Amino acid sequence: MVLLWIAFAIGNRIPLLSMFDLGIHELGHLVFRPFGTVVSFVMGSGLQILVPFGLAAYFWFRQRDRLSCGLIMCWAATATQDVSVYIADAQFRSIQLIGGTHDWWWLLNRWHKLAIADELANVVWMFGLVVGMVGLGVIVLPLARDAWDWMGRGPALRVSGPVRVRERRSPRLLP
Image (tube, rainbow, N blue to C red; front, side, top):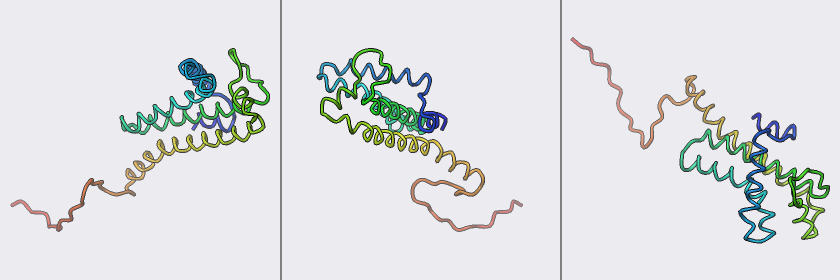
């Protein structure tokens, strides 16, 4: 919740995580450079978002570790929010870059779509928020279910497969 609060409510970057995201962003430019300029510009932000999504999928499907998956989905949400800020800055180019051209200014200007930067940024921001809420749900719902069961309010016994009903017998008394 703290990650999402910092990113979405306050609008700040996550201190160490944002530097890691920047490294992944720049790696995306480098790895996808052979595929052309447009792909290289898109995949900076693309890889920044896809890496946490890929890790979340790994923990969900391969490891069956829902806690790790939920936490990494929250990271994906903050990375997506960070990309939305970068997109919104396309018209102004006020974010200090580590060098080169502003990716989203170049992409949107190329297609004469700088006017939609705010709308695109809002869509990306909302997508990130939804991802973050899903990540929190993945973390919290199993914990709430376990707490509910622990308090005696849930089912007494979870059975996988068909349930067989037996007759109740009175206990045998030992002689």
